[in-house]
Image 1: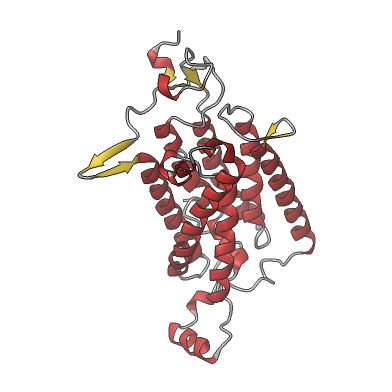
Image 2 (image 1 turned 60 degrees about the horizontal axis):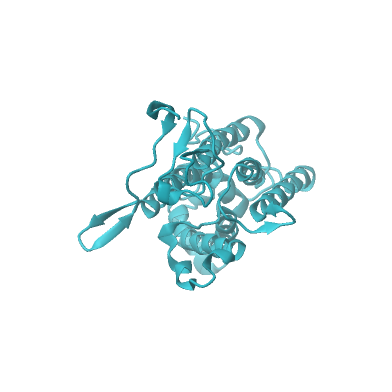
Length: 308
């Protein structure tokens, strides 16, 4: 048996009662992750000459779209969990958010808002690139509170102890498992640091830094998925998330290669804020001094918050 000091304990609670309300830790840590990610993205966008309020405005669309996309992705890929109990589909506080769905829906929402505000989408995505994995790392703590999405049994010193009622069928007598939430969280934090380093030293073309984030996250997810034992839809004997992560990794690498050969350079890409297209927009831009369109650092990383 693993001694107490050689394993990670699970939290003794997953929610707190506040008067008539029940506040779920899963939702709280996700909210904290969103706020921290927004703060980082605002600072990085400001360093590029953009208006930090642009990030706040975009977040009003991207965050709810991302949550919806994450839930829809989970329901599509794990629909079998809810057969005979369809109301559980709405119990989002019990977990079940697919990051690949969140990224897809969030980017689509960002495209719409960026076009309406005449903002450079590639630069927005690059500004947000290191912020997203930091937010993800924080949000993964929600899996710890819910005692879910852990990996195979293990006797490693950092094994996670799972309560009896949260253990999988057939393994009720096994108490310790791989803390895959921790692995993914640490991978995400390391990825954020690598992205800052890439932006500072190699000056990637606009949009490439975000593609590096997508590729880096997909690589980590391939590793983590091989450890997880929670129920999941299989395709040709492999978990569906393995197929998705592999496809996303190939697509991201292809984008980086193509963009590096034929894409716009940092000097060719329009500045942080694209020129307004209507007379009214021109007047508003003149009143603001058009400061949102100035880019002080073409590389986009000199003043990066994460690099400080």
